[in-house]
Image 1: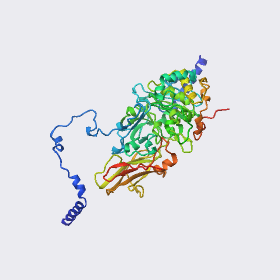
Image 2: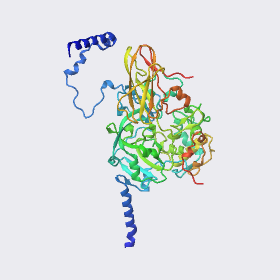
Image 3: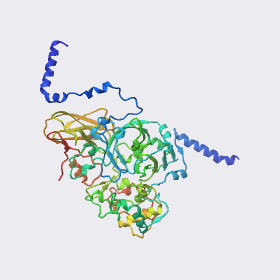
Length: 414
Length: 182
C-alpha cells in the first residue's frame, strides 16, 4: 500500500466516524473483570452430551397457560430467536392429541395391511435397512397463524405466538412407496388410513397418489433419532401438507378404497366458508412469511442500521421471493434469500434497513414458485371470515413505535 | 405321492414368485389373525366396515355418559373444559368454532364410534366395550335430535344414520367414497 492510498483510507475512516458517532458510542462499552475471568481457570471437562449455555435457557417453546390439559394442545417454536434454517430438535413445535407415548424401539412394529397382496409387519431395524435419504423440510400445523382470525389483534403478539407452529428439520427416512410396493398394492387401492400409537390412536386418511408421490417414513431428525415428541421411533412425513397428517409414532397403515372420514379430517382441520359451506381435505400449506427481527415484544435501541430478518416457506414447493415493506405497505422491496433455498424447506430472508426513529409498520410477503402471493390480513378475512380456524397465512404486520418498542401492527378491520 | 405333493410344490413356486417381486423383503408376512390382533381399533368407514357386534340406545347411553363423559363435556353435553357435543343452532358462517358440535358439524355418525373407541375417555383411551360405545353414540345423536332415544344403534343401523351437517360439506364428502353398487 502506498502512502497516498493509506491516507485516503484514513480519511475515509474519519468520514465514517463523523457520520456514525451514535453507533460507536454504543459499541464502546467498558468491560469488566468478568470478561477476562474464564481465561484464568480450567473450563468444564468433556461430557458425553452437552447442554445449552445456561444463559440461553429463556429460549423455550410457548405454551398457553389456559389449556385444560397439557396432554393435548400445542407448544410454539420460538421462531423470534431462530438464527438459522434448522429448528433445534428440542424446540420443534408440538401438537399432541393424547400425550407423548413412551415407545420401546425393540417392541415397535409397523403393520401394512388392507388392500395389499401380502400384509407385512416391520420392526425398526427392518425399516432402517431400506435405502435411506435426507430431506430438509418444514412441518407446519394446520392451525398456525390462528390468532390472525381474532377480531381484535393482540397488541402484545410475538412472532412465536403469531406463526410459531412451524419448524424446519433435516429428516432421515425411507420411501413409503417402497414399503407399499413390498406389500403389493391391490388394484382397488386409493387411500391410506394411517394410525399412531399414542393415547388418541390418532388417524388420518391420505390419498394413495400423495403417498406414492413423495411421502416417507422418518426415523432421523437433525442427525439423531426422532425426539419422542416428534414421533419416536418412526413418523410419517407428508411434504408440504398440514402437520396433522404427519402421523407420529406410526404403527399401522391400512390400504383402502375409501377415506375413513376420521374425526380430525371432518369435525377438525376443516374450513368454514362465508357462504355457509365447509371445505375439507385442504391439506396443502399456503405460502407464509414472517419478520422475526424486529418483531413483537422486541425493542430497537436507537435509530440507525438494522438488518430485517425473517423466515418464509410454502407447501407449494419453493419460495421464489420475499418482499418487505418498511412503510406500512406503500412500497415494497425484494429481500435477499439466504442460501440454501430448498423446496419445501424454510428459507431465511434479510433486508438492510435504516430506521429514522419514527413510527412505522414492517410487513413481509412470500411469493411461491407458482407466483401465489401471501395475502394481506384483510384479504384473508374477506375470503374466509373470522370463524375460520386453520390455514391462516395473512401478512403479520409489526409496528415500530417511536422509542423502538415493537408491537402487533395488524389492523382492526371493520 | 406325486399327486399329494403337487399342490405343495405349486404353493412353493408361487411363494417364490411373490418373494421375487420384492427386491428387499425385510417385512415379515403376517396372516389375517395376526393383523386382527394387532389392529385393536379397526378403523370405521362411513359404510360401516370395522363396526363390531353389539348395540345400545340413548336410554343406556345417558348413564354411561353421566359417569365418564359429563366431567369434560358438560352434564347435558353442552361443553365443559372440552368440546360441546350438542349443537344449539344450525351451522352458518357466523357460528364460532366453540359452538360447532356433532349436530351441526359432523358429516358421518360412524366417525363418532371410531373416535370414541380409539380416543375416549381421555385418560383411559380404548377402555370402553362395544355396547357402551353404541349407547354413547346413541345418546349424543339423540341429544342432537338426530335419532329417537329408544333407537338401537348397531353395525347395521349406525351407518344408515343421516347426519344433518353432511350438506354443508362442499364438495359432498360422499363423492370421495367408493360407489356402492345398487
